Image 1: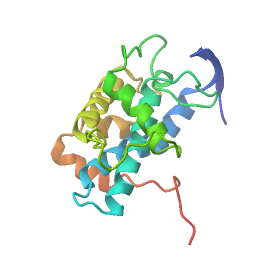
Image 2: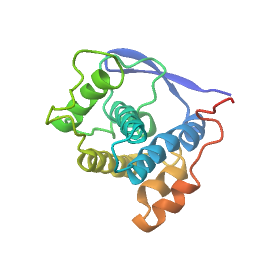
Image 3: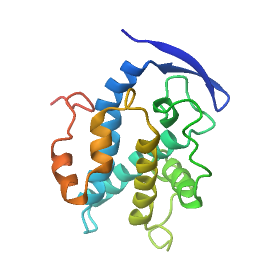
Length: 186
């Protein structure tokens, strides 16, 4: 059974699910975002192949998803899930978004999410994605988020993944594949 409430966020009326629904959702879908973002960075190929391009695009898509999760864009939709949904009212206040995350959100929108003239050319010195810096900023937000999130709303799998020591992260990532997200038919 889906339980809902209505909340105002970023000038849009949103549906906010009940604690049990958020707990279930976070154990599957939010875990998928956090784990896949981490996995992409740990497995990023170093060559200049199409495979590396796919990894970089995957990094960008999940980066934008997490930026929008932590910092809702102005066009937030009624069914979007946000970090604030997992915290008690008024607890999730991440402060201003860093310029690097602002630029990354815009860059993903222009270079990965759409075919535009704003894509960077092969000789553009700013074409390289600063993966370590962007990854570090998201990891910092994740840690702050799990400190403020309610255990009644956020699945234990998220707490475990975000708070795991580096030596345990690879084990958790191996066990993090989802059973229902992004299944491909052959």
